[in-house]
View 1 (cartoon, rainbow, N blue to C red):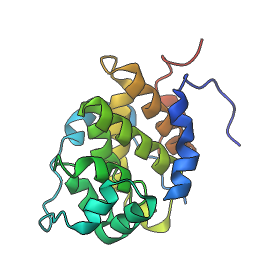
View 2 (spheres, one colour):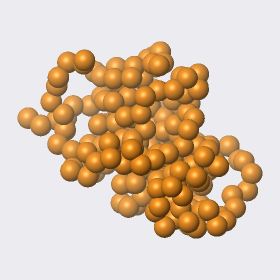
View 3 (cartoon, rainbow, N blue to C red):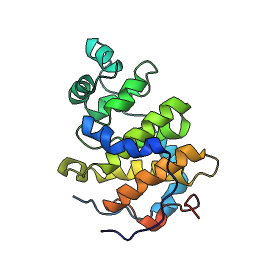
Length: 199
Protein backbone atom coordinates (compact mmCIF):
# COMPACT_ATOMS: atom_id res chain seq x y z
CA UNK A 1 0.00 0.00 0.00
CA UNK A 2 1.30 3.44 -0.89
CA UNK A 3 2.32 5.76 1.92
CA UNK A 4 -0.50 7.88 3.23
CA UNK A 5 -0.34 11.56 2.41
CA UNK A 6 -2.67 14.48 2.58
CA UNK A 7 -5.05 14.69 -0.34
CA UNK A 8 -6.64 17.85 -1.75
CA UNK A 9 -10.12 18.72 -0.62
CA UNK A 10 -12.11 17.13 -3.38
CA UNK A 11 -15.77 18.08 -3.97
CA UNK A 12 -18.20 15.42 -2.76
CA UNK A 13 -19.27 14.63 -6.32
CA UNK A 14 -15.76 13.42 -7.16
CA UNK A 15 -15.97 10.61 -4.63
CA UNK A 16 -18.94 9.00 -6.38
CA UNK A 17 -16.47 7.73 -8.97
CA UNK A 18 -16.62 4.17 -7.62
CA UNK A 19 -20.38 4.02 -8.05
CA UNK A 20 -20.19 5.52 -11.53
CA UNK A 21 -17.55 3.05 -12.65
CA UNK A 22 -19.68 0.14 -11.45
CA UNK A 23 -22.30 1.18 -13.99
CA UNK A 24 -20.43 0.95 -16.91
CA UNK A 25 -0.17 -4.14 -15.39
CA UNK A 26 1.73 -1.41 -14.81
CA UNK A 27 3.54 0.40 -17.65
CA UNK A 28 7.04 1.82 -17.33
CA UNK A 29 6.85 5.30 -15.73
CA UNK A 30 7.20 8.04 -18.36
CA UNK A 31 10.58 9.75 -18.25
CA UNK A 32 11.23 13.49 -18.13
CA UNK A 33 7.61 14.32 -17.33
CA UNK A 34 8.61 17.38 -15.38
CA UNK A 35 10.37 18.91 -18.40
CA UNK A 36 7.72 17.87 -20.90
CA UNK A 37 4.75 19.12 -18.88
CA UNK A 38 5.39 22.71 -19.90
CA UNK A 39 4.68 21.70 -23.51
CA UNK A 40 1.70 19.50 -22.76
CA UNK A 41 -0.82 22.19 -23.55
CA UNK A 42 0.01 21.84 -27.24
CA UNK A 43 -0.23 18.05 -26.97
CA UNK A 44 -3.71 18.35 -25.52
CA UNK A 45 -4.85 20.32 -28.54
CA UNK A 46 -3.27 18.01 -31.13
CA UNK A 47 -5.96 17.15 -33.70
CA UNK A 48 -7.32 13.64 -33.40
CA UNK A 49 -6.65 11.41 -36.42
CA UNK A 50 -9.56 11.50 -38.83
CA UNK A 51 -11.65 8.35 -38.98
CA UNK A 52 -14.94 7.28 -40.51
CA UNK A 53 -17.63 9.98 -40.52
CA UNK A 54 -19.57 10.13 -37.29
CA UNK A 55 -23.18 8.98 -37.70
CA UNK A 56 -25.44 10.03 -34.84
CA UNK A 57 -27.95 7.20 -35.16
CA UNK A 58 -30.62 5.77 -32.85
CA UNK A 59 -28.07 4.32 -30.44
CA UNK A 60 -26.53 7.75 -29.95
CA UNK A 61 -30.01 9.12 -29.30
CA UNK A 62 -30.72 6.41 -26.72
CA UNK A 63 -27.37 6.88 -25.00
CA UNK A 64 -27.97 10.62 -24.86
CA UNK A 65 -30.87 9.94 -22.50
CA UNK A 66 -28.35 8.65 -19.96
CA UNK A 67 -29.24 4.96 -19.64
CA UNK A 68 -26.13 3.06 -18.50
CA UNK A 69 -26.89 0.04 -20.70
CA UNK A 70 -27.19 2.19 -23.81
CA UNK A 71 -23.99 4.05 -22.92
CA UNK A 72 -22.19 0.71 -22.59
CA UNK A 73 -23.58 -0.49 -25.92
CA UNK A 74 -22.44 2.72 -27.59
CA UNK A 75 -18.99 2.43 -26.03
CA UNK A 76 -18.59 -1.16 -27.22
CA UNK A 77 -19.66 -0.30 -30.75
CA UNK A 78 -17.70 2.91 -31.21
CA UNK A 79 -14.56 2.23 -29.19
CA UNK A 80 -12.44 4.87 -27.42
CA UNK A 81 -10.85 6.38 -30.56
CA UNK A 82 -14.19 7.04 -32.26
CA UNK A 83 -15.68 8.44 -29.05
CA UNK A 84 -12.66 10.74 -28.71
CA UNK A 85 -13.28 12.07 -32.23
CA UNK A 86 -16.90 12.69 -31.23
CA UNK A 87 -15.69 15.18 -28.61
CA UNK A 88 -15.19 17.62 -31.49
CA UNK A 89 -18.88 17.37 -32.42
CA UNK A 90 -20.86 19.63 -30.05
CA UNK A 91 -24.12 17.67 -30.21
CA UNK A 92 -22.29 14.39 -29.51
CA UNK A 93 -19.80 15.65 -26.92
CA UNK A 94 -21.82 15.20 -23.68
CA UNK A 95 -22.72 11.62 -24.58
CA UNK A 96 -19.21 10.77 -25.74
CA UNK A 97 -17.74 12.13 -22.50
CA UNK A 98 -19.84 9.69 -20.49
CA UNK A 99 -19.44 6.74 -22.87
CA UNK A 100 -15.64 7.00 -22.73
CA UNK A 101 -15.82 5.84 -19.12
CA UNK A 102 -17.25 2.52 -20.35
CA UNK A 103 -15.04 1.99 -23.42
CA UNK A 104 -12.54 -0.86 -23.52
CA UNK A 105 -9.04 -0.28 -24.84
CA UNK A 106 -6.38 2.37 -24.19
CA UNK A 107 -8.02 5.32 -22.40
CA UNK A 108 -8.21 8.56 -24.36
CA UNK A 109 -6.71 10.68 -21.60
CA UNK A 110 -5.38 13.53 -23.77
CA UNK A 111 -8.71 14.48 -25.44
CA UNK A 112 -10.45 14.26 -22.09
CA UNK A 113 -7.78 16.47 -20.50
CA UNK A 114 -8.29 18.98 -23.31
CA UNK A 115 -12.02 19.20 -22.56
CA UNK A 116 -11.32 19.34 -18.83
CA UNK A 117 -8.99 22.30 -19.35
CA UNK A 118 -10.74 24.23 -22.13
CA UNK A 119 -14.37 23.10 -22.17
CA UNK A 120 -17.29 24.85 -20.52
CA UNK A 121 -18.08 24.02 -16.90
CA UNK A 122 -20.55 21.23 -17.68
CA UNK A 123 -18.32 19.49 -20.22
CA UNK A 124 -15.25 19.90 -18.02
CA UNK A 125 -17.06 18.28 -15.08
CA UNK A 126 -18.08 15.30 -17.23
CA UNK A 127 -14.55 14.94 -18.58
CA UNK A 128 -13.05 15.00 -15.09
CA UNK A 129 -15.58 12.43 -13.82
CA UNK A 130 -14.59 10.14 -16.69
CA UNK A 131 -10.88 10.69 -16.05
CA UNK A 132 -11.36 9.70 -12.41
CA UNK A 133 -13.18 6.52 -13.46
CA UNK A 134 -10.45 5.63 -15.95
CA UNK A 135 -7.72 6.37 -13.41
CA UNK A 136 -9.35 4.01 -10.90
CA UNK A 137 -9.65 1.20 -13.45
CA UNK A 138 -6.92 -1.47 -13.40
CA UNK A 139 -4.60 -1.19 -16.38
CA UNK A 140 -5.21 -3.81 -19.03
CA UNK A 141 -2.73 -5.55 -21.32
CA UNK A 142 -3.82 -3.69 -24.45
CA UNK A 143 -3.43 -0.36 -22.63
CA UNK A 144 0.05 -1.14 -21.36
CA UNK A 145 1.21 -1.73 -24.93
CA UNK A 146 0.32 1.82 -26.02
CA UNK A 147 2.76 3.67 -23.77
CA UNK A 148 3.08 6.71 -26.06
CA UNK A 149 -0.67 7.33 -26.04
CA UNK A 150 -0.80 7.04 -22.26
CA UNK A 151 2.23 9.34 -21.85
CA UNK A 152 0.63 12.03 -24.04
CA UNK A 153 -2.52 11.93 -21.94
CA UNK A 154 -0.66 12.05 -18.62
CA UNK A 155 1.33 15.08 -19.79
CA UNK A 156 -1.84 16.90 -20.82
CA UNK A 157 -3.52 16.14 -17.50
CA UNK A 158 -0.40 17.15 -15.59
CA UNK A 159 -0.38 20.49 -17.42
CA UNK A 160 -3.95 21.15 -16.24
CA UNK A 161 -3.13 20.13 -12.67
CA UNK A 162 -0.13 22.49 -12.59
CA UNK A 163 -1.78 25.47 -14.24
CA UNK A 164 -2.31 28.16 -11.57
CA UNK A 165 -4.71 29.98 -13.89
CA UNK A 166 -7.09 27.00 -13.97
CA UNK A 167 -10.00 26.95 -11.57
CA UNK A 168 -9.66 24.92 -8.38
CA UNK A 169 -12.67 22.74 -9.25
CA UNK A 170 -10.79 21.58 -12.35
CA UNK A 171 -7.32 21.22 -10.86
CA UNK A 172 -8.38 19.23 -7.78
CA UNK A 173 -10.01 16.33 -9.67
CA UNK A 174 -7.11 16.36 -12.15
CA UNK A 175 -4.70 15.95 -9.23
CA UNK A 176 -6.84 13.15 -7.82
CA UNK A 177 -6.75 11.29 -11.14
CA UNK A 178 -3.00 11.79 -11.46
CA UNK A 179 -2.43 10.30 -8.01
CA UNK A 180 -4.31 7.17 -9.05
CA UNK A 181 -2.33 7.02 -12.29
CA UNK A 182 0.84 7.37 -10.18
CA UNK A 183 -0.24 4.39 -8.09
CA UNK A 184 -0.38 2.46 -11.39
CA UNK A 185 3.20 3.50 -12.18
CA UNK A 186 2.38 5.96 -14.95
CA UNK A 187 4.21 8.89 -13.37
CA UNK A 188 6.02 9.73 -10.15
CA UNK A 189 3.97 11.15 -7.28
CA UNK A 190 6.53 13.89 -6.66
CA UNK A 191 5.73 15.32 -10.09
CA UNK A 192 2.13 16.00 -9.06
CA UNK A 193 1.50 19.47 -7.61
CA UNK A 194 0.71 19.72 -3.92
CA UNK A 195 -0.14 23.43 -3.64
CA UNK A 196 -3.86 22.62 -3.25
CA UNK A 197 -3.34 20.03 -0.49
CA UNK A 198 -5.13 20.69 2.79
CA UNK A 199 -2.77 22.51 5.12
